Amino acid sequence: MKKIVIIQGHPDPVGNRLCHALAEAYGEGARAAGHAVETIRVSKLDFPLLRSQADYLTGVEGTPEALEPVQRLCRDADHIVLFYPLWLGTMPALLKGFLEQVFRPGVAFEYTKGIPKMLFRGKSARVVVTMGMPALAYRWYFGAHSLKSLERNILKFVGMKPVRDTVFGMVEDASDDRRRRWLDRMRRFGERAL
Image 1 (tube, rainbow, N blue to C red):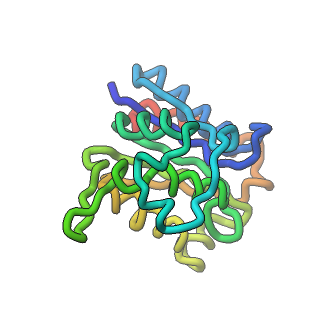
Image 2 (image 1 turned 180 degrees about the vertical axis):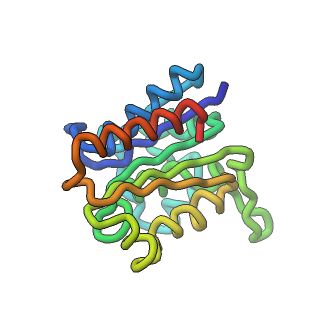
Image 3 (image 1 turned 90 degrees about the vertical axis):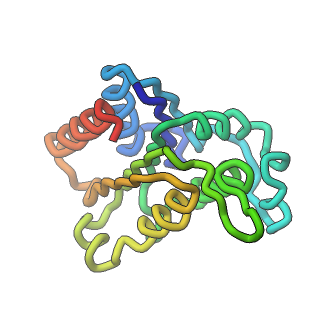
């Protein structure tokens, strides 16, 4: 059994988006397989954006009260799954601000004599991105630059490995049958904690 944290990064608090359905399907599959699952909806949290390096470097002591339980969940997790829509070629600003607050120095990594020490070693991750463009165009023409940056510069930087990803494109035009297949795929990933 794994401890799984699902981070729902869609900034719309209403919750009727494909990202929400995909995250729920993942959680259903994981729970059915006996995994412990916690879901964090970034849109429901109230936290400030960091505005200076000094604020960022305050580490755990500077963490907003609303995010302290989130940091504990992420520290204790075996597997973290992030869901978000592609906005202007990258993750929504709210999710980026959330990650800056939660994955602070002293929580996800720390520096020793200028060398980063990865504090999330032993954890795995999956990133699920939805978008209006074809997934193939995002991967091959645009190079999936923002996804690669998230994987390399944040998740792997703090020690997560392996980091897998799933990209769903043309979501607005997807048929009901195609959406059902996507949800089934997420349930299977959840069952296997992938």
